[in-house]
Image (cartoon, rainbow, N blue to C red; front, side):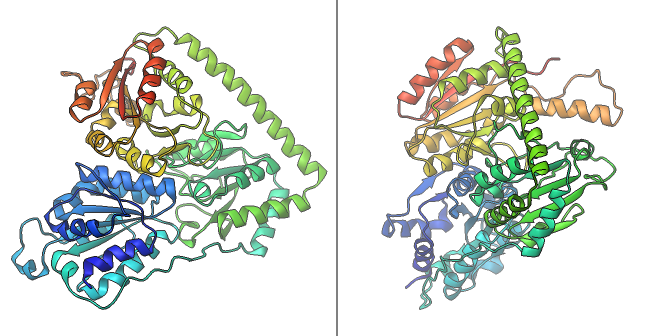
Length: 555
């Protein structure tokens, strides 16, 4: 058999059901092999970043290993920004790129470079087989490393001649790897004792709670302890229902604000994430020295990595939360339960008041012209069905998205990690492949959309009925906000314009661009028309783009 057959057999052995790629000449061995493996569809992208983003969100949505096929050095370079996002999102992926014939290596042939070195900084592991004999073992290791916690992308370069070499070493898979380690009984007991003495516990949760299927367990734990729950500032998944009374939204980006947020709490439990991703420098510890810190992770790598820790547990998150909740429930006194219930009641009251304030804000902005993001997202949420999947990159409107939509379980929401933009337009392709029977909607800002506008062609080419909703404020609004913060922090003059942050002269014509890429589209400036346009778009059964013109940042 040939190396390319071993490669494809490795995908089959590991249950791969999709490849996302942008093909080139050095990928011919893989492309030609697809004819013999019709059970693995290939989703074509017009840019490598779109292929990587689609595979990353597919991996998030399915829990399966995403497979990406890129084209040598320039193609890998085009995809690296999205690979970085996949690394931050901890998406289990194998990124491949064709490599020139190894017999040309010393001649530095066209498009060649050290692909392994290029990919290494943004992957968990980067390698290239020297012979066809290494393809089977290398793919076996790639699947293992990509899926070992913390999960993430790996990279394999595939030289043309190596893919065509003969080998007798077949594909091998270790598919039943049980990683559900139990938590230390002593560690659980120590955490329980700490919580029983706590007067004000808090929880900060990461995406791994959703990945491990532990959301309901976390809800039970939060209610038992009467703890508020914050999620990571940038999140890829729903690890706690956003309308649950205990949900406090996202943790701040700044050390000082995180410190201020968590300072009232004597115990903070961190579960399954990176938690704190600062955007601006602040002096001082991120968590008060007076606060006891507990961290529960599926891997030892994250324990006490960037903050101090009093108790650290390595365990499967579902297992740890089950043990912890059971042990705490068994030892909880009536006084403990009453105090926890009082805190829960206070959260419910605060949530109801927040909903009233949100409704009042909506009414105050009801007739804004252009329409406000708040009104736009209200109309959008009212028009979409209950089982919709939202792929969100609204950025400065993200708080309104969380306010208007009910994300109650994993699978309702996906977002990008790492801060690079263009992820929603690309990621929604993979998300729709993962959810063929649910309506899937991308919410993207106009600036973000332009990073991955080619994704529209992929949706049309593969007949994926995705609704793309572009919130067009005709500016990089988040950059304007950040420039305001920069000027304040560094005592810079503040009454100056925002240079190069407006998307005008000319205004972006998304309707024309969409139609040019095979997707029907409409522009909406009147919020009362949004519901009807959305209903028609969904009823079409085709990909559709709606350009929603909203207000920008006040000058």
